[in-house]
Image (cartoon, rainbow, N blue to C red; front, side, top):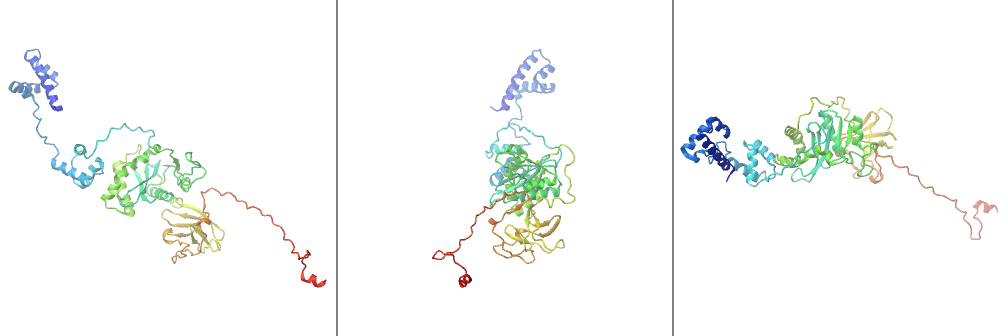
Length: 453
C-alpha cells in the first residue's frame, strides 16, 4: 500500500467519525470542519459525496491519473541515452549543466537526478555532516592569495602534468590557471606575473612548503626565515607576506577546488576537442576561468579591493631567477653550460672580472645586469643559447661558441644560496734534493772545478 492510499484511509476514518457526530447533532458544520482541518465548504462537499457514493465518494480523485506537469517520457529517455553514451563519468550536476548548454534540455536538476537514481545509472551519495569553517575569509579581494599545483592527466592521450592555480581567499575566484610539465620556480613566477599584471600587487601569499617556496632545514620542522628561495626573495622585495601551510587541512580552501577541477576539467577539454598544452592554456585563459568563477566564486564580505596596481612595472625585473656571475677574460659569462657574450658598452672599456647579475624571466628570456644597467638581453634561452657540445650559435644572437667547463666543474653563484665553506689546501712539506755522489762517494763537482785541479 502506497503512502497516498494510507493517507486516504486515515482521512476516511476521521471523516466518518466526525460525520456521525454531526449527524447526531453533537457538532455543527463549523466545528466538524475545524476538527478535520478543512474549510466549511470542503466539509459540505465531502458530506454530499459520502451521502451519494458512500466511502468511495471520499477517495482522492487525483489518484491513478497522470499529472499534466509530469516530465515527458521521451525527454527522460533521451537524457538517459545521452548519459549512457557520452557522459557516464560526469557527476549529475555537471551532466545537467552540459545538457542545458549543449542539448537544449529544459527539465530540472531534481527530476534528472531522481530518474538517474531510478535507472540505476547513478548511486545516491551518502549524507555528510556540515563542514565547519575554522578560519574566516579575508574581507577584501587581494588581501590573501592561495597558490598550489595538482598533478593529474588533464588532457587525454598526454602524460600527467601540473595544473598551477592561483585563487583569491575572499571570493575563491581563480585569478590564474595554466598547465606545465612540472611545478617549480618559473611556474610560480609566471602565475604571480599574470596576477599582478591583471589585478595588481596583493598583501600575502599562502602556499605549501615546497622546495621552490621555502627552504626547510629539517624535514617536518619549520621553514627557514633567513635562507630564502628565489620565490621568497621576490615576494620580500615586493612587500608581499609569504605564509607557509603545515598540513593539507590548512590548505583546504585551495585543495577543494582541485577536486572539482580534476572531475570537470578533463571532460571539458575533451568536449572542446583540445589535445595540446598550448591550446589548453589559451582556452583556460580565454574561456574556462571566467566560466568557473561565474559558477563557484562568491561575493566578498566587503566592497572594494586590496589590490594595488603596479603602475611602474617594478615586478617585472623582480619576478625572475637572479644569479650572479663573474665575467671572463673574453667578456663572456657562463649560464647553464653555455656562454653569453656581453657587447661593448659606454659604461666601461670592458667587463672582465666584473660581478654581473643574470635575470631568467618566466618566458625563458634572459637579461644581464650591472647594478641598475641592463647590459644585454636574450629573447629566449630555448632558441638562442648555444650548447657548448655543438659549439654552434645563431648569427646575431650575441652568443659566442666558446667552450665552457663541464657542468660538474661549475658552481652556480646564486643570490639565495648559502655561502660555501672555505676550503683550506693542505700544506706539503718539501726537501732539497741531495747532491749526486759518484761511485767513490765523492761529491760530483762542476766541470770547471775539475779542470782547475
